[in-house]
Length: 169
Image (cartoon, rainbow, N blue to C red):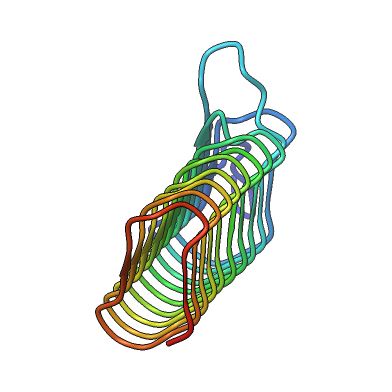
């Protein structure tokens, strides 16, 4: 009949998808939340494009950006592009191509930074890598803090191989 409304809803190109329970996607396009079998999500993606929360991303949050991915308990990506968080209680604030993989690890921003030590922090910069527990890099480029309780303030191509070592920059 004329004026009849279809009762089925069809996904449109650019649509968002939720298959995880208790999850929210606020907007954007091509964002997705999906759950591992028997593991509820409680994930929020506020917006952006091509962002994903999956599997064990319980209580996770992505604020926006593009191509960001969370897969860990209580993980957060505020924004940026191509960032990946898999360590529980870990976060990336922004930037691009950053990775936080261990418990309570963080990357503030920049590009190509990795925090793979428990309680590790990379504040920013480019191509910095924290591997030690409770280790930190403030910024700079191509710095490597691989031992526990070590700190690199900044600079270029600095490496710490001793526990509790410090390089100012």
